[in-house]
Amino acid sequence: MACKETKTAVVLLSGGLDSSTALAWAIKDQGWQCHALAFDYGQRHRVELLSAKKIAHSLCATSYHELAVDLRSIGGSALTDHIDVPRDAHASKDIPVTYVPARNMIFLSLAMALAETLAATQLVIGANVVDYSGYPDCRPDFLASFASTANLGTKWGREGQGISVVAPLITMKKSEIISLGLKLGVDYSLTHSCYSPAMDGTACGHCDSCYYRRQGFQTLNQADPSQGG
Amino acid sequence: MACKETKTAVVLLSGGLDSSTALAWAIKDQGWQCHALAFDYGQRHRVELLSAKKIAHSLCATSYHELAVDLRSIGGSALTDHIDVPRDAHASKDIPVTYVPARNMIFLSLAMALAETLAATQLVIGANVVDYSGYPDCRPDFLASFASTANLGTKWGREGQGISVVAPLITMKKSEIISLGLKLGVDYSLTHSCYSPAMDGTACGHCDSCYYRRQGFQTLNQADPSQGG
Image (cartoon, rainbow over all chains, first blue to last red; front, side, top):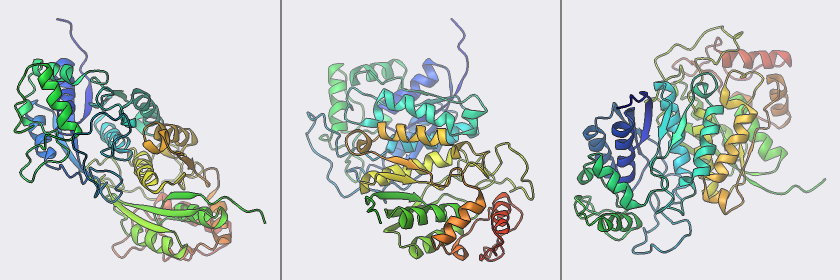
């Protein structure tokens, strides 16, 4: 077996299906030392943070960080503001109301700051253009541009090794992501995807995120091990 | 007098001399509708937030926003971590220990999110390369790259008017900044610059920020109206 170079990564982890799989890929497939980074940003599905912590632990991440950033006071999204999460509306290619203004740019910027203090060379994000083509901050041209900007605007980029932004799932279908995750031993019962869960954390089954998750498991003829999701 | 187009701007405001002057420039010189944005990021000179609020009010900003983002848990800087702020060490051209990893990228990303919800077309930042040449995130190439990235990664950039990043003080000396601010009626007694103030908010007089401020006022043969600063 070829010996892979051990790199250090900061991995954005929401506790959902995609980011959990991306973390598993970075740790188990690439053999990187991974620091997981989750955000308490005022999301209405804040229950996902419990999932993030459990997933980071179950995949043996090197460390788990939870960072508070108040996006609720900015608003402009159904995930943080008084806007209803749509039910059963998955056909549109418009930017959905669950889009949070500049979210991935904010999260990646904070991840870059952490990467600089940890001397990490990889920023891993579970962004995906197939199911989430409407989100401008999930597209490859944005991610490439972000990496250039981050390397220009930091000490680590100017004087150190700098970072690469890695999006291993970017062109995968949901079923392919799940298939990869199952091969890498991701325990999907720990993950949370729903945008609009009940008070007890049960998935609604009707939002975009529930829809794509269900489709993915169905395509593989697999049961979704998460409660109600 | 030529009639200027009224634009809407989000202005990063720390409560210091530069950002206060930048806000005055945007409101009084450009005639823009300006939303001031300050950050509670765990800075040890948190007293600057009081100044930010007073300055925004005194310059008649359209609104004042204070946003919490926890950079202390990331660390890596004398401004947020257990690292001493250097006294009387102003000659070095290295990146100083008061550099906060990725700070301007984080702040500009959050400003971009607010700009998107307010349909603002200008992000104004008091960045300056003369006194702060060591800070990678105060350089023009970073600011230009940030604007491109922000426009790729947001709905406002892809489908709306998008934003320009404007740094009106970028090549000014401190004395020129103060001269401009005095002309525009900035009340510098309200501003706070010191990185390492006493418990009562009194400036230390020895950090980089105090040094450049004092030099600026001395060059103009003006008294600095702020207490001790």
